[in-house]
Figure: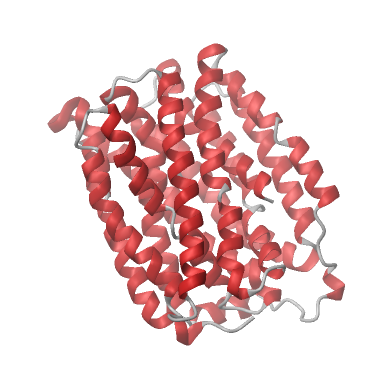
Length: 399
């Protein structure tokens, strides 16, 4: 499941680096690039996650995940055929359709096999697919685009995911739906349960606010490193990729570990740990973008990147604890609907839109200022998670 998540983010992050040669060849604006990397993906990824999660809860989670990996891999490969903005927009929608079936059923599979006291760490291990996949997307995307062409990069990396789909279908085992002790409730019943719990809304919108920054910065920082720090495409892939890999893996693992260790003393730890991390990430990112020294910038970017991903194990674990086991994929999909529709859909777009609008005042530095203004979303995320920590102990169920 971790390997599938690696390819999930490898294919997703690939566009962040390939948009640089795509922009040069096709003459796209930052707003168009933001739409292509955000709304095109998030509009279908977020909405289709719910019906696919329902299908997974009822007919088997493994088969849904395997089919999802197959579909997003094929559409990533086909993205190399795009000739203009609208063709690439539609192909990225196809990637979103595939990835919609991957994450929520995976959360449920893992949660069913791990006791609550270790669940945040287990989901953190799964979430290591984010920095590993993102880093590989930066490494190989830059190398293939420079050595061959951005079209070949899409094709090669996309097709590489197909053996993973085959392996999941044949080697990952799921409990047959007919043997589950508790039948999956209707979507309306699950949604009603979640809607009645304030912690669900606070966690969802807190994560979504952080994801606006996370996806926005992840998508636009490659352009910043090339334009403002004068890195070549291949050097940037190694430089930023190493930040993502090291910072992301450390942050995700420490977040899961801290939440599991502190939960016995503080039932709201799953929300309190991310709250502190988000509030620290904003000023540290500001400091990172205030230096032009490559040596100093690396640790300054790695530390807030680490903090920005602390939430993955704790918050996804908390959502699993709000519903019975049979409804976990559906509950995860409801959470992901809010998080991804707002985070992916608007994060990349807002930064690109602000960059285009601020060019008259800031010129070539407009992208940097757009990202600096966007850091306020980390502050909002921290405050929402702090309120969630207060409420969480009343809303969770022990399962």
